[in-house]
Length: 196
Image (tube, rainbow, N blue to C red):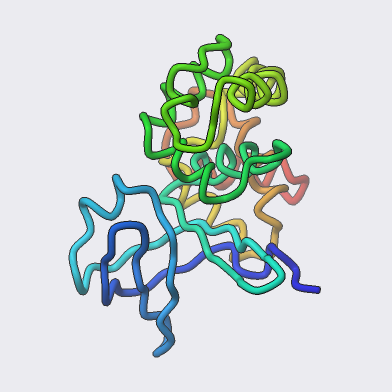
């Protein structure tokens, strides 16, 4: 059995772009990473990219999904936690609108963007809303929302120090809004993790 968290971050040079995925050269190995189309559209060959990833394990395949921010990854993982929603459907949902719009839609019970995805009818869209509405709302209330994409450097620093991505994200969410610089935010998260 594979540990689905065994590849949680990937950084390297793009050697190929396709409609639904990038091929990223990491230490001489080419990783096929499915990503949102918004990222593919702005990516060129030989460009360096760094992505937070989710490894989807199936009986006959291992598929890697990559995102520019932890916030996108978290929302993707929330979507695939809903029964009947697979990684490809979750990625298709993320292609429909900005992350902020999708989160707002789920929180307010709006199925508009969800039903535009092939294979997701009104019934499945309502199930997504029902399963995720409270989770999305609780993430937004009093925590500053999901981990902001600008905190990627903070999260990377913490995971490099050996903290799990989950613990690091929780610590980042507790940073006061008035702490702005990356250095200070790292110090604050270490305090939140009880190390300073």
